[in-house]
Length: 120
Image (cartoon, rainbow, N blue to C red; front, side, top):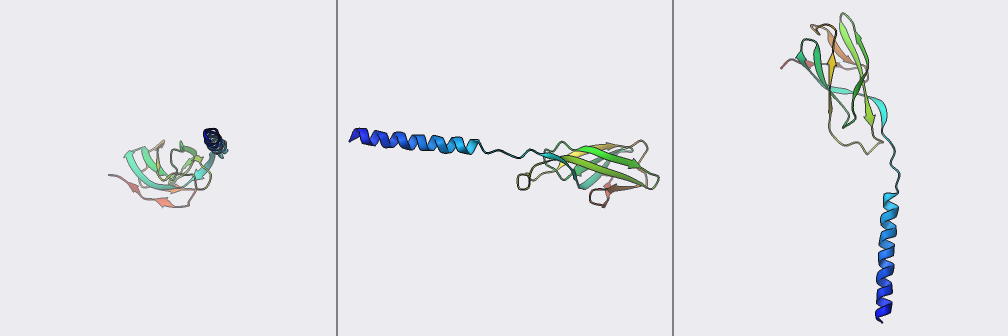
């Protein structure tokens, strides 16, 4: 009788280990660089704007920056996880302009939105 009970316990242990190993072998899709929208902007110095990118731990970077006399166009990209795997938070990024923002508009080219730039 003891021998039979021990065999059952060993079988249960092997089954649990097999299930654990199978769970660990699930392949995750890698994050990819994609354009992300901006949600907030704040002027921290005459030529420095801090923006909130709609990514979470995505290492945002400036993909394109065009500084005209009436507007500043910016595109930001970040590493984005596959759908459903993206945690909820924002990444901050600082944009350095060659001249003061002044009265120029800040336009997020990903969303097409003109961002209101807070001045504190």
